[in-house]
Image (cartoon, rainbow, N blue to C red; front, side):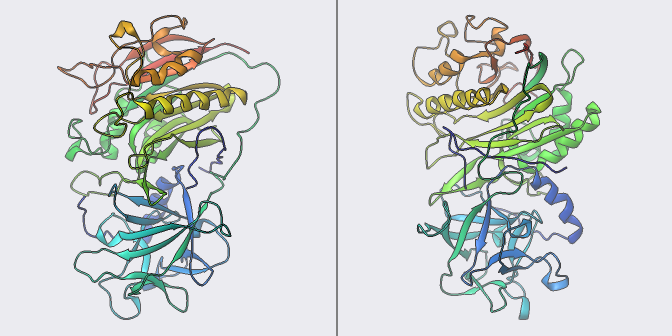
Length: 499
């Protein structure tokens, strides 16, 4: 399915930018499936300009020993020239380059001799040592595209001499240089994620009332030994089965689903499951969380999948499932500590209802991301979340949003003192209605517990659903079990009045 997307310049900054298994080898027949999974991502795309002034592309028409080789021969940037950058080494300058068109990682042919020795090919199915490079980034000068960086790539593969990536006379990229070769990394956007823009205008005239059934669940899908997934990692089959088991409330399927701690390449399998289970068409989109490397936001990678195949599961972040009518989706980046995870939100429109739905995942407290006693980073992120919802209201959409906020409610009745991290949600509650409040924003800012279980029951509320103040949450409930997660799913049926 082809989707268009946009990005806006607003109060929230938009990204312009394991010891692992051995190098996996992808076959040509694998490309279509893997590339479609990657296509569901709203992650930052990049182009790579070589010292010869040409852009690097994946040679999709080459066959045999040259299949999918990287060559600096293009004068424009299309799908063959787009890449994403990934890391599973937070705090280190170790990154990987993934082709958008194949969905696989650039891999040097270190074990080959002759004409293919050291040649880079976009065929790495797993993120092993062959697919990883020591990278050095430095900001480009004012004459280059905004957000561009100079970069060098040096191999780190076990058992092989470290070499820099350079180019041959015919533009082929090869890891044979003993000295650094600088490439220019330029931010680019596909048709699904242009650099700037606003969503389609809402129809003129009255907006009809509607009901929206929404579910949010932190699936704990990455690498957490408290969550019970096979090998501590959610596989696609396990994950889709777990989501399916909690979809229905009062016999009804949700109209939108928010996910946190989700792996990128599970978006397409979840979409297929939703379509099979509900008999309706769905669109599932993904937005990565980043690590910052020398000022460049690099997508954080999910740990490789469960045994026995231990497949690459793509980047780590948040996802959203909406009806297939969606024509506009957009990622936002929250302000985050530069040396910690760069947290994200993701919004998608539901045009027939004049609604936008957004999910987000705020920074975690100590000992993880927000190490301040007063929760200052989460407080700033809460303000940005409120402003994000306000922006959509200004555009004429009714925002319904939520996810894992990583703070308990700002309610004295819930045993929470004034100030501190919980005040992060005060500006949100001041302008929006939370699921547990029903139709009365003066009700306590509390609600049922949703996370951090003990004895089979949740012990804190960390998950939320919000809607405009004139809405009415007809139903709001927490799932009976957490399933394979440390969060229980939260379900809300919200009535949005006509306007």
